Length: 341
Image (cartoon, rainbow, N blue to C red; front, top):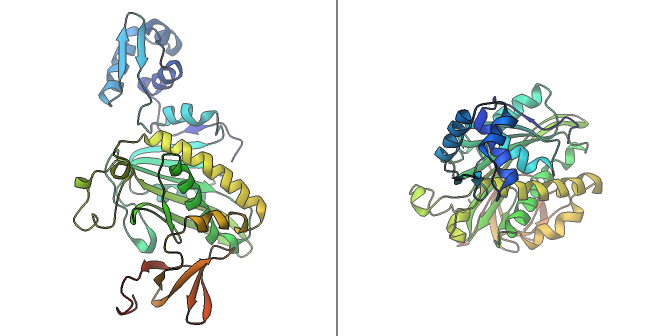
């Protein structure tokens, strides 16, 4: 993480500035007079800003004692994230967009312009979110957790594929704190009940002997209901809300992920390989010891997924041989009589 203080784009209006103050004093009250004095504005301006916050769905109680924020809001505003994450991640650089084509597209541009490691690009909705193999990533406003993190890891380029597995493991462990049991579909998906709930996409720039930068894009289906899915997506997609039966707070989920991600990245960087984390990954690996089809470009192979290597490659037993697959897209084989892929 960089040494720059936490910062964010998008000019902060008064509501942005008031929200962290309300969160800091919750469940207590803070008077309108105190808010006005700290912000250097009139009490009328404070009242208008409170109404704007209420308009975004925040439960704010007003009384003679002042204003009280009830609970933690499900908002991704940079001012609020700065307060929520600041103590644990003081060096994050937050870039927020309400709507964006892709958080990873912006993160890559910022990387090319020299942005530091620890830049977090987050949005409420993506218009052109991307998954592997140029697939689109479905999203609706306020129902997904969509973000990209810029890293500049000092590791050998051949280790980069395992970063996708490290990220998936960190995300799985953060979701396990919500009493969920996600499975990891190599190399970059998380499944709940056999359906996709989250995906990870790595994009990078490398020199022959070093990694210049890596953008880790993450998309999580958080508060979708069954009715939100199209007929095409319904059989293979799910959300945290569908599985838990309750709405989850995206900002809190982000904090939980970043805590695990920071710890896993430190371990991955210092350990020299994925070996130290491989056991934990295998415990959660979907389709382990099952017959799968793996498509890599125009090539497709069928075999038994028997594990992963220290570099993050899939170990596929094909006949009497074990092949190492560095990248590809897998599918579970239900009927072995069906043609490969």
